[in-house]
Image 1 (cartoon, rainbow, N blue to C red):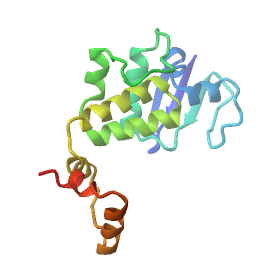
Image 2 (image 1 turned 180 degrees about the horizontal axis):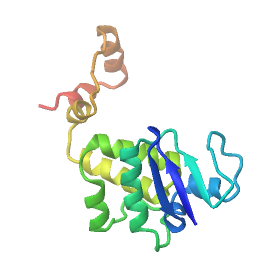
Image 3 (image 1 turned 90 degrees about the horizontal axis):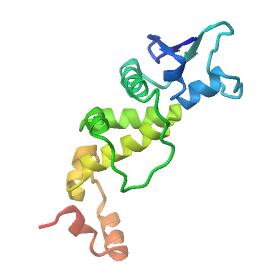
Image 4 (image 1 turned 60 degrees about the vertical axis):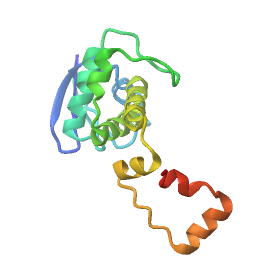
Length: 166
């Protein structure tokens, strides 16, 4: 049995049952969980499931991960100190935008192991950066008014040090 996954742009991906079983939303949708609204499921052997929040480039990347882990027990929980295999770390990479899109899609598709890996990837990218560097990387503009800065000084006198550690 195969399942067709349809991306946000309408691109179709034909996946086998073991690969589809890695994706919680697809597994639930394809095997009788009719409470997932917004998914179109065919009733014959070739099902089509629309994943409206996942782009084709991110879906293809996620399917590579699912294909790699199709014969293994899925990771459902972990801790902040867990070590990931080299393959996983090479897979997730260091491109913050792509990791964030993978994180969002893994959450939407309910893939706990990939969600943990994406969180680890973000932590690795942010590791060793000061707060100003993190703000710059994420495109956060610190545009506080004078009044807001005075209020923050009252609450946390040390906040300026985090933004301007000299």
